[in-house]
Every structure is written in C-alpha cells, then in structure tokens.
Image 1 (spheres, rainbow, N blue to C red):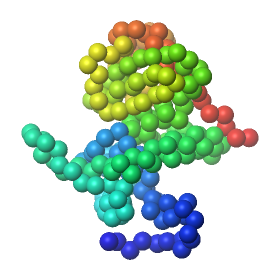
Image 2: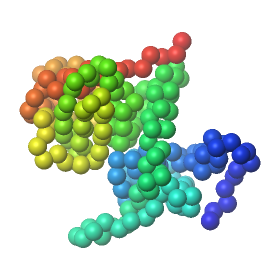
Image 3: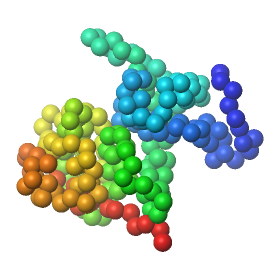
Image 4: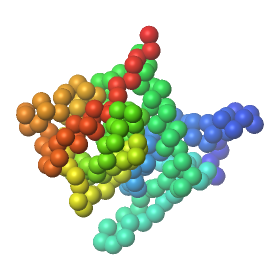
Length: 219
C-alpha cells in the first residue's frame, strides 16, 4: 500500500479526505462515474494530469477500495478502471460540490471541461420542481460518445449507454451542448442554426433543458 498523508483526526469527514482528498483524486472518481475507462481515456478527460500522477492516484484509490481494475470482454480485452460500489457512493458528494462550486465568483467558466463533467453537471443543475411531470428517455450523441438521459418522478439519471427506443435523440458537439445546458444558447436557435439536431419529440428536449438551472453566483 502506498504511504498516505493523514489529518490524524477521528472525524469521519477528515478520514474521507484522507482517502480521496489528494489533488486529482475526486476528478478521477468523476471520470469513472459514467462507466469504466482505460488509462488513456482517463488522461484524455484530464489533460492537465500527468501520466505518473494519474498512475499514483489510481493506485491510492485501489488501495482504499474506491477503484478496481477490470478487463473488458472479447473482442476488446482491454484493462479498464472502474468504481467499486463504495466508490460510486461518491456521486452525490460530487454533485453537491458541483452545486456549491458553481456559485463561486472565482469559477472560470471558459476553462476546458471533460465531456463526463458536462454530462454529470446535469445532476447538479436539474430542478425537479421545474421538470414537474416530465417523463422522458433521451439519447444524447456527442461526437463519438453515447449517453442515456432519463427523467422521471422528479429524478434525472445519466449513463454512458445507448437507448433502444428513445423519446428523442440529440446530436451535437460538446461546446453546443454546454451552451444549451447553461442557457447561453436557446434550443430552437441551436436547432435552426443546425448546431443541434433533434429527432423525435423536441418538446421533451425543451423541457429537459428548461429544468437545468443556472446557479446564482455568490455576491
């Protein structure tokens, strides 16, 4: 086991930070929340992270039971990293951190973001009260990535997967999806300019993005 620094404090929050508080550790967790990834795919999602540091963080997260290695079945057969059940329990922690950090006046909203970060941010922005009785399975296709966004009973779920019979299909690129998500670009304007293609029930797509709130910046 790698040597880890510790706060030496019996508070459970302090212990949690002993486990996942090192720089980049929680971002590694973020990149695995939507499914397993190869080492090179993790690097792609965090371009500011060196290979050596990523290897160290993965070892540390494996040692404490947050991450484990797995092998994809044939014909791929690649080694991947995935979250354990306990590791996946960190999703609401990251969602709440996103809600809190999204209100910071110091947040650089033009800085690069991974596609997983953008897709997961829907959980932090989603307003059940605005969504109301919205019930929809929406396929999101961003370049070569495929996501399933499911809304129902006041809950939004996102996973890296295809939907066999979606109510609507969104096809776009990451900058456009991010702009629509943050209300910098209207859905209908994006469709009219061909930046966003929608198949199926576009009214459900409008309602989905209407339910994405922009957090108020702290004054």
